[in-house]
Image 1: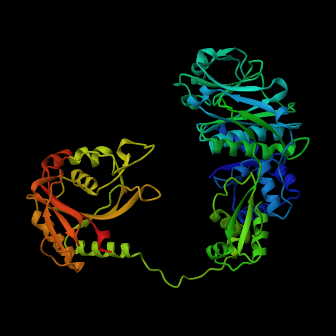
Image 2 (image 1 turned 180 degrees about the vertical axis):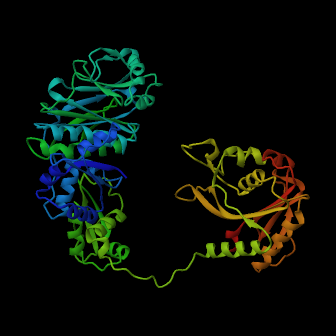
Image 3 (image 1 turned 60 degrees about the vertical axis):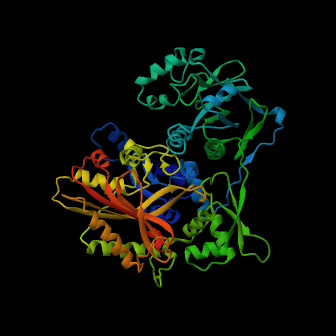
Length: 590
């Protein structure tokens, strides 16, 4: 989870009171965060520079390192953390507002069509009459860095640019141009660079080189101009030096470009709500109109609260504590959520979610906040009256026990594999209708979800081919198949697979294992076409030898296949000895 470093004295000043370390540790625990470490600024610097640590003195600033939930972006700064803890302690929640400005008077950002080729979205806002001191300025910069690392996914999804508005002239344009057409002086530089030259220049920069890949191979680079064609920024790499903010900056223009509009809006809301406290008109943000190339326009930021209804029974049932509506609403108010009873006589609670709480997406998030405010330690412990395993798991254990008593050893193989293993190496063709493809695989060895247990079993034997023969192994596990009837587009299947490898194929042993499993399941062997039991028919699967394989028909439906593995398949997996293999769907027995 992210860790936020804050000065103890400044945090206590924002909270309006002081705490002992034990008291503050307890407050953090009650709020669902953790005081991870207590150190000093000098100790942090010494550690970063690998220097020997000096003895702490009374003048050293005490730094609290606080671990927060990864989805609580509003807690990534001292300002946001202090606000949340104040409300948790019973102080009134702040309401953020958007300044009432006619559309014709708003600053405007015009978006060009070419931006859709690389980074299509931009949202903006203005903080007017802001007053920075050194601490708040550093916090402002630090929050941008933390958001870039967290929700922005190292600037790939969104990137923030902050500018001194008094050095610029609106309206602004968001464009995408060939890198040779972009010239400006970047932040902390004095020389004018062309954008393609800048990419080469920053390859030696320890901080910025890791972001270059986001745009460097594109034919166009995103760029923001003011009406004088002054470059504000080259997102997501660097801002221009002309509009750099300083301690003397009074009006801050914030732009956030993105490939994900939802993330961009969350990031913008987090920035403006956190630092509007330093504005002349506290907690008020000036909007900016963003006009798309197709004529559509939107005004940002959107600081409106949205409402969801949550059943009281869901909250109390999940937590395990009988609470009244008034108790729940008071607890939610401590978590910055306005709540009230929904209608007369209803047992639902209407919850208003502020712009700072982007983590509230579902009733379970509301329930979690109630539990935190109530106190996990205050929830009574109870013993569950009984726990009953799922029928499918009971059946799986029964089959495991039976096959183990037949001399087979259980193995567990990866549920992810390569496309080559489940298609080409099994002599199968990919019809694009069965395998679930991993969207962003870390390795070609784990690029699809297995549709059969066979590749894993054969790989196991291939890696243990010098093991004394015979090898008798089995696995009971899930495979995943594409299924348009499911809301997630795929479905799990629990399969049994068994493999025999030895001096001979052991086909008769695998066949007898099929008969034993059916006997244990109380299923008789019947004549072909009879749906009261099971029978076998010749099959033509490419992974098995033709004429030495059969499909298992159970109550009229095919549930599995067994046979002698094809020599080409064995060769693909590096297995020199003959093998027989069984695979069947055990969910069919339920």
